[in-house]
Image (cartoon, rainbow, N blue to C red; front, side, top):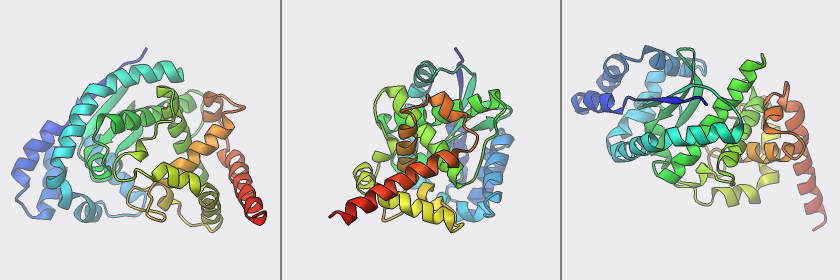
Length: 298
């Protein structure tokens, strides 16, 4: 069974922040990039490229969304760091057994520029999970219970990517792919713990799951309309966006759709699909139709 190597960069961030906290905002960002991130250039490059791929200025995002809040979020980041160190290795071992995959991995604990609380990717040609303490603290996911779900979710992403690479399958990026990928990870999270655990219900969204269930057909219709209009589906997935005050509702839709597919396919079979939109769209359209029939019968 593969092991995960933990790389904890938080002590290095604290050393950097102790010198930078009283500086001007732009100087803090410069210190973050040139001082703190210096030993991990690939990690820095990946974050900057993530924003450039979205046609965003990473420094502007850092200036507006991240650095003004770092000081007040330090206690939550500290808590998250300690819980990640304690939980990551045992959950990785459990996940490999539950999902049926075997791979070495690197887990990075770092303070980034808002690229995500968790990010399954390749770093230095090694399957890696990047845990952004700044986003974890912002989302209110520093507790052990929330982090168990987040860790499992990202490991499920990792397993998905590993399976596809081993079978020569590509990794997509369009709207239906995002719904599919997040759905696989949400469903994998539930399999790892043998329960319908959702880390999204932690933090400030305690009613998230009930609200999503009550608005399932409406969310499905809104998602399909958004895709058909050629608009970005970011409001369904980004933590800085919301739909009716609830963020990341696309994770709910993805889970529900993958759960429906899992009644006839294994998770690995689902993970190797070539065109997920061909499978997901009919499921969402069935929900929409059922909702319309229900309303017409009222």
